[in-house]
Image 1 (cartoon, rainbow, N blue to C red):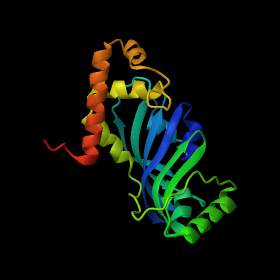
Image 2 (cartoon, one colour):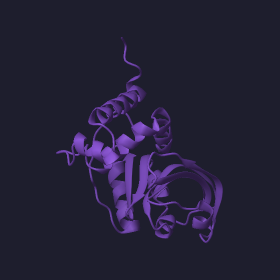
Image 3 (cartoon, rainbow, N blue to C red):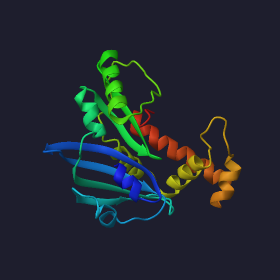
Image 4 (cartoon, rainbow, N blue to C red):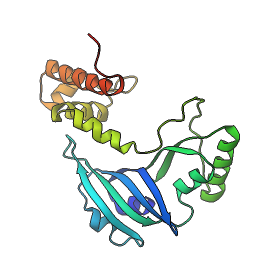
Amino acid sequence: MSKIDRRLRDARSIELDNAFYVEDGTWIESLTIASNGPFDVESLLADISGVTVFYDEEIPTASTDVQIRRVTILANESYPFILGLVLRQETIPNRIVLQDGVFEVVATAQDWDHFRELADEIQETLGEFELRSVTQDEAPGEPLDSGRLKEVLISKLTDDQLAVLETAFNHGYFHIPRETSETELADELGIAQSTLSERLRTAERNLLELIYGPRQE
């Protein structure tokens, strides 16, 4: 992931969706790569030793400025591999994403002692560790594969709804406090404010239906 990030000039994020260990340090890895510009996977990975492209597809988005590709590769990962560090401590990896040169890892540990062992090993092996937050939960969470959720969400929304959500997100509409208004977003998209409001509410409803199911009448 780090090698891809260094080679991809306009990288937004690289997320490890899933990985399976084969043998002798070789893994089958599924990645979601997002970039601020178009890129060719074969060219991107061509000079990375020990990496072979197994599968590659583009995930459609409403934005012409962002390209997202889901890539499956066969890769020889030398130690330390961030996923290997997590698994060595019998910890469930929930999310691993590389953004702006920094790995963000969400993981579920059995107890505090297991978590401390993981934190100590990451600190000792990689030289840097920052704890962002800790929560106690009875449910361990889903292990990786959150990239599939992106595909499901995109398939449930129209291009117009995606455009509204992406524009609203990029302009800080969902920030607290908000950094833009519906009027400004409508002007940016060249649509009426009532149209923007309708598309925004419809998109939010569709997303909530994925979580809760259709509302009972």
